[in-house]
View 1 (cartoon, one colour):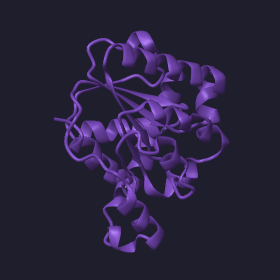
View 2 (cartoon, helix red, strand yellow):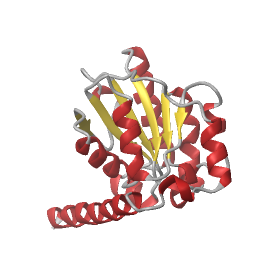
View 3 (cartoon, helix red, strand yellow):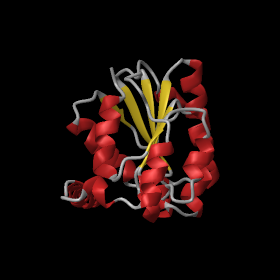
View 4 (cartoon, helix red, strand yellow):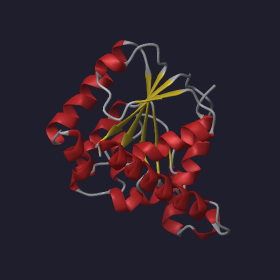
Length: 205
């Protein structure tokens, strides 16, 4: 029964991801961005050169399906990655980069048997271990405005600890992510989830 549920969840994520990729590959692209988004991207201090190394440990902060979508992008771009949706500090071994995908899901956390405080503590311990081992951190938010809300927003301050941030543009219309990083690291604002893969690939040597 559990295998059937897991297969169903994987198929659902694959369908969602495929739809987002198709949307991201549509005709208009950046030409259809609002002036506000164009201004935001122009003002952003993006990553200027490849600074990160493989292999990657990829995990979710908030237990949403967004991390699985990033996993698909990582694989699509040929990056070496270990995916552990609920990775704890001791999961960091020989990895050179930790990728945190921020997106809260009450359903996902319920399935994982954790609450907000426990998820936040796991994230903080993981970040502390990465710092101790001199592992660089990339923080991502790919769910856009539809993933924003009280649950996701609680995890936004964790962006402070990253070395680089990638945030889908319409997830930052209130500048919450921009304010969280506030000159502490480069941040890029791809137009949609499909475009995040290009930024992620370009970040690695």
